[in-house]
Image (cartoon, rainbow, N blue to C red; front, side):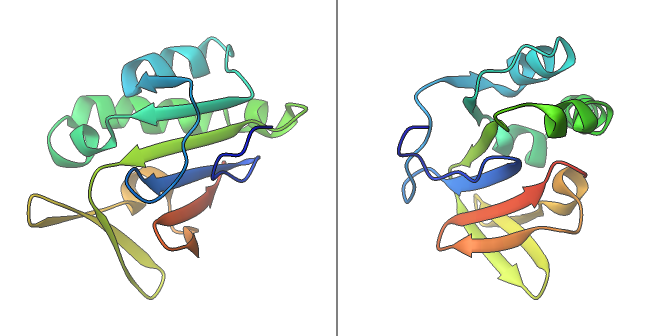
Length: 131
């Protein structure tokens, strides 16, 4: 694995200006397709999380559906994939709840990543594949 900020076997939510991301970067739509086709590289960075948090509910539903449907596949891979979701915005946390501040509005990460989100470091959250 390269020197990126990611824990293999988990979804990594990182702030683009604070963390090192994987070189292979795809938009959400392509990630959903790759996940459904079970065609993921060992390291991948997914861009566009702001869009599904703020406006595109259909794409958010597709993303969550694919993540739930393929969690056993992801957990069975060797090596476990390192999947990053990069955000342009600040991550705010209160207890076990985390929001991304985008254009002065707060958007919860829970509808996408579930309730098991944990802070790993500044600008870096992790969530299990089981969302």
